[in-house]
Image (cartoon, rainbow, N blue to C red; front, top):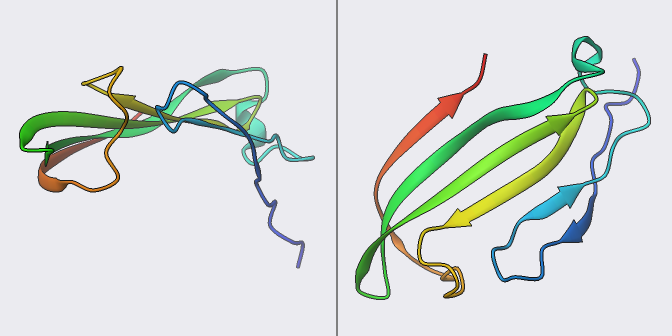
Length: 96
C-alpha cells in the first residue's frame, strides 16, 4: 500500500489573520484537479468574542490537485483573531 501524501505548512500570513500556506505534495492529492484551482469549502462561525458578536470564516483552497491554503477571515480585522470564543452557530459549505 502506498503512503498517503503528507502536507506541511510552509508560510503564514503576517497580518494576524492566522491564514497558512500548505506546501504542494510531490504527487497531486486529487489528479482530476491538476490544472485547476479553487475553493474546497468553508465554514462560517458566528461567535461571541471579547463580549461582542463576530464572524470567523475558515476557507480551504486547492491548486493543481492539492490543498494549498487555509484562509482565516476575521470580520473585526484589523483586531487580531481572538484565541478563545463561544460558538453561537455555524454554516458549512462544500464546493462541487
